[in-house]
Amino acid sequence: MQQTLLLQTPSTQTATGKGISGFTLKYLALIFMVLDHIHYFFGFTGKIPLLFSQLGRLAAPLFLFCVIEGFTHTHDRKKYFLRIYLISVLMGAIQFSFYNIGYVLVRPDGFFPQNQMLASFSILLVVLQGFDWCAQKKWGRGLAAILIPTLLPFVVSVLMAAFPGPVFGFSLNLLAFTVLPVHSFIMDGGTATLLFGVILYLFRKNRMRQAAAFVITCVLWDILRLRLMAPELALADFFTAAYEWMEVFTVMPMLCYNGTKGRGSKRLFYWFYPVHIYVLYALSCLLYQLL
Image (cartoon, rainbow, N blue to C red):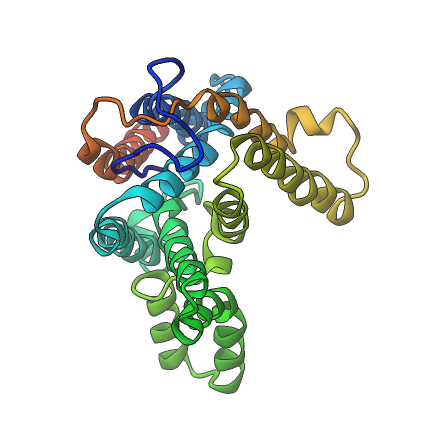
C-alpha cells in the first residue's frame, strides 16, 4: 500500500497552507499500514488488539487516493508507472514462490504474506490511462487499456480450461503474478482497488462528490456483498470479523487534503512497503518458532 509522487494542486481546488499535505496523508497511511500488518503477521500470538487492523482499513484507500493524485499531476506518467510496476513484479515473483516452494518459505502454521497492493495499483494506472486516452478521443488504445486489464481474469480462466497441462498452467500463473498481473488473483486490493480507484478518479474534480462516491461504493461493495455472500452475519460481526467497511472513514483525511505536495522522501514510500512486509514476516516466523 504505498504510492507517491508530486501531488500538485487539483484543477478545481486552490492550494492552501491549511489542511493536510500529500506527504502528510502518506505518512498517516504508512502508520495505519504498519498497525494493520502488525496484527496481520503477529495475530497468532493473540496479543495484538483488533483495533490495529480496524485502523489499518484506512491505509489502502489513503495510498490509493495519493496514487490518483500522483497519476493526475505527475509530469512523467511512464516513469511513475514503472516505479510501481517494477517493484510489483519483484513482489509478485516472491508471492509466486510462496505457492510453489512453500515448504521452504511458509511459516509452520501455513501462513505466508499475500501483499500485492502495488500490483493492484499497476493495473489501475493502466486503466486510468485508458480513460485519459478516451477523453482525448484516442478510442482504440483507450478502450484497449481499459478492457484488457479488466477482462484479463476471464481470458486467463478460458486459457486454463483450454490448456489444462501443468507446464502451461505454471507458466500462465507465473505471468499472472508478475509481468501480467490479474486483479482477481490479488488478495491484497485486487478487484476492489480497481473499482475504488476508478471511482476516485472519475470524481476527482470535486472533492465532496469524490468522498460521497467513495463512501457509497464502499457500502455497496463491502456491506451488501457480505450480506449476499454471508447472510448469516449479525450486526455485531461488522465490528469484529467483517469490518472492511471501516475504510469509509478514509474520507475524513481525504477531505482535509489541501492540494499541496508537502515535504518528504518519495522513495521511502516505494521501498518501505516491500521491505517492512518481509522483515515483519521473518520476525513472525522467528517468534512462531520460539513460542
